[in-house]
Length: 291
Image 1: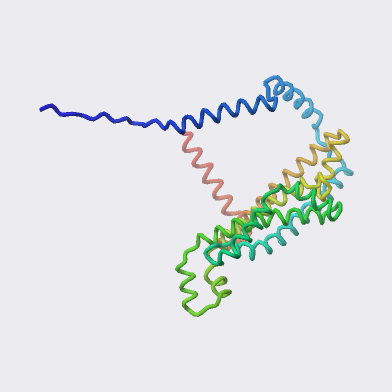
Image 2 (image 1 turned 90 degrees about the horizontal axis):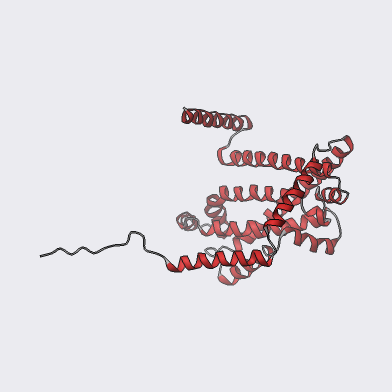
């Protein structure tokens, strides 16, 4: 009696996926042709970019320019802080109303529609609308970033609430707590750390956007940057860009410390000590790996 062996294919070909990848590649090539993306234009662009970078260095950090940069950066920071505080304050109730495990559907879906509207447009587009509505200045930038903050924080906060454990909520509710008691003792403690991360990220995002919306007249350092480009003052442009990079790095360090302060109750010296220990540990691991 001869044993019959059935042959099996180790990797079954997924023809729909292969066809999809082929169609995607064809579309990319076709879209590049429609947009006139050619190798010649890329080479010419690199050559022009080299000349542009040559005109940017060395950056112009004269006393007059430093004063303009400082004034613009301070205004950008103020716009970002105010917009973040107002946006987070409004996002908390909106996120709660959008959570499907807490609210009825007739409240959830209109709230989610509002969040979708806030997320539909980039902050620069919203800033243009606010500039047309209230005029030039920081108030237009604050309004634009508040709308963007609501669209981002509310969505993430609602999704975080929908992922909480219902056991803690049921335990608080069984103790006789009302709706607000359930929120304070059953919902907020489960999402506080995540919400803190959302808030710190949104502050970073608002800080970056606050340096950009000034291009359309909504306040901040972006106005000075746009004016420098128009004057072909490229060494001043370089100084502004370097200042913005330094500001974002400082804001990132500050956000990390705030998260450590609330999550681990770390003082500033403890936080810096832990960062130093982590850096030394990485260097030691790298040295062992190299050896």
